[in-house]
Image 1 (spheres, helix red, strand yellow):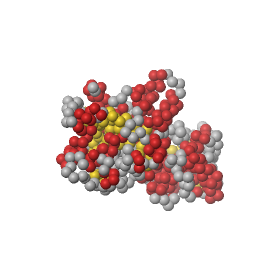
Image 2: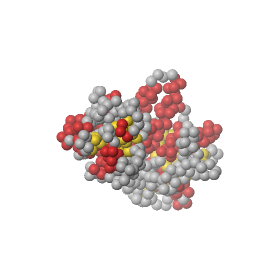
Image 3: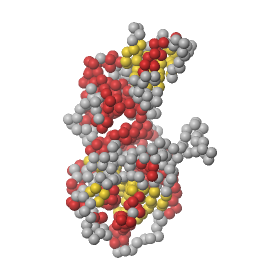
Image 4: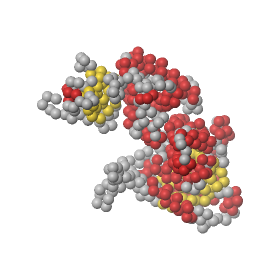
Length: 558
């Protein structure tokens, strides 16, 4: 370029041609996520200058905070297009089913689409999130039901004109959403519609149109979705995203207490499910068990059989409750992305009697008959329950008190709430602030727990565990087994088994520092430990607890 010599990030040449500038037909500039297209030095103008300096270059792709494709016209003008051409083709086109590709990272795509809706669609982040959900559903439905020609796709000519973008919305995407509402009436209201302007909709469709959401691995979809959720979860009512390592640790410990043959028949519930983290973790860890079973059985279509078993198990035995309608919808979508169970997530106040729930929730949720409750109740001084009508249902209101308590923080009341869902001998895994376990003024809660169930495990988590979501500063996980009727009578009579073993652990690291940045394992001299491919290992002691518990349980169970 004049006297200067520049290096492009990726250059595509004509097949068989020597790799010189005159033979370049496509140039790609790939930037860090925070770099914006309008950046003076690293933005889209840099790409355009490279294209202009290469006589044969027809297309360019710029990827950073956004993803933008350009075609150099014969006049030298740079025209915006949907994408660069596929291999063996001379121009971009609307994709067909055969063009869909499995991807190994959806996070950047979801993030770009969500932020584009937020910035260019004039929507608040939460509203942008809901619009994004609608389009993800449309995309998944299109992959399931369309023929060779896809509806969730945009032709470059359509994207360049207002009439074309309007046809995309009115003729293909809106009818798709109508079908989505029929399939998921428990997620979307009948009068909902897509609120995006045609140009914003066309951008999102162009970003996602070549991806196969159906065939992309569940873990990849889940990770991308969970990050999207994390951007939109404010914690206004003490609702915080439970870190995946905490969910997996708790789930694996509880699953280790049952035989593998029992796992698909267990009724599992989260009584304040939030975004569905514990339920998703249960599905994912169950999936690993089922894969081992199907391999041992010699099943031919292993993945198909696993999907079928997961879907049936979830429909029969997985349940979620939350009072927040935003979180209910978020959890439902999360479960759809992970294999399903979305039909059993309900908007109810689980501190209230089932007689006050919706008819559907009352009919489906097995109150008092659940095998496993996994939950992370809302924390904070702003989440106080002071409704006497609600409090009168609870023993904790009067337990070891001279006069009935007039209010209780939600995290304290939910200890008893969770136990009421369990059947005799059922297992509770709950995230709690350390204060409940060691504050002298909360002795009455510990007393109640020990008179209503057997303490199995107590894990004191690092302070940094919730650094990303902003949750409780001093968290613990408690495992409790609910007493049988006979054991309860003995406990009320003061006859307690004080000889049983309790698993206790205090991991020092959570894989992140106090600012939420990842930390990695290091050699004594400070060098990071890497595998043969150069991959680093998170310094996360929480992840190792479940294996230790499994060994302990096998040695000490009755």
